[in-house]
Length: 446
Image (cartoon, rainbow, N blue to C red; front, side, top):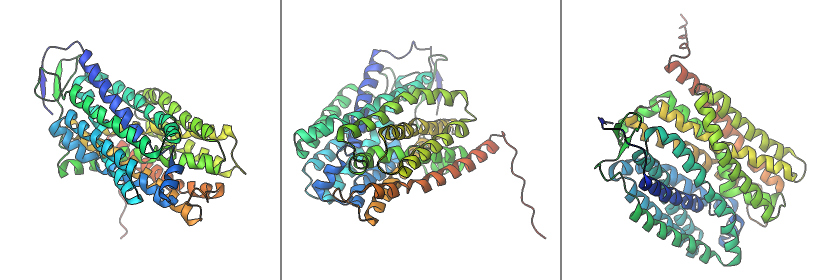
């Protein structure tokens, strides 16, 4: 990353805010696309005559493609900038939803979700790049938090209006309508977004406090950069933090929450939608709080924020699972609040990646970190589906509360694995930074 000097700028202008607004609106639609099966999972199972494992595959392949595309998208963003890559991403999602609208079989529907994951992978990193190029460096953290908070409203759109549209019209009309919105936003992104300010010919970030200009680029496309990023224990700490904190909430809101609440717990669709909406709203509210706490206690955030978040989620799930009979509404609401802590806590992982990596490989470390959470989520979604099938409860007609309870227990090993590596890599990171003494070498036995 190169540095130049120029007089300090007054800060982002109207055009920067317009570009960010279009970008974050596209991100809201991307979240809606990503979550579009969350409120209609039972309808999808009935439409495709799919058992639980097959239904899981819809989300698994989508998340697998999303996670696998993180590093390639970083390379493309470095080379071509945000405008063309986000435009292509929106078009891919539109094609994916149009394919979903007319899909006659499970195979075609899985292809549709793959296209959706590939397009989705381009949007959030693209918005982050726009923030880096159009806004001063010191405003970056708050703009990233604001982007995440606004983007989560896409889950609310998927939970309520999308489900209402499906039940009022048809499967084809509903998913065809989302495809149409994707085309509209592809046009808006292409017409209104620009890679960098017009007075510069490169993607740069300007710090208005110092006047320093930094060219936004990285070594993400080199194997050496990837190996160097992973070699630092801080990157591995970031990976395992993102692996461990958000997956339970992702599995719940992306696929299994609505079937569990309606077919398992016997809640009405309106009650289930309210519980899921609480998850989204609490996550949005906790974002700034978790960000401020992370800023204030940078050397304690794993122990004081990340690991307690994991414990809260596990305890809440165990309380729901252990309750005799259907859980009372207050306990399900408490579960939603507990799961909602995972998303804000997962953002701490990106603080680790940014803190422990030089700027020239920041995109690499960010891509590795982001992949961790989606890897855990796809494993969790698949394990829950397989567990339901193995109990003979893999279709809407055979869903049972006791089967759901056992299926959700499959999350415990993932929490245990992730928490163990968080502890290990936190210690290694502190040793690397000179905050803790290195371990004494083991004595060889003579």
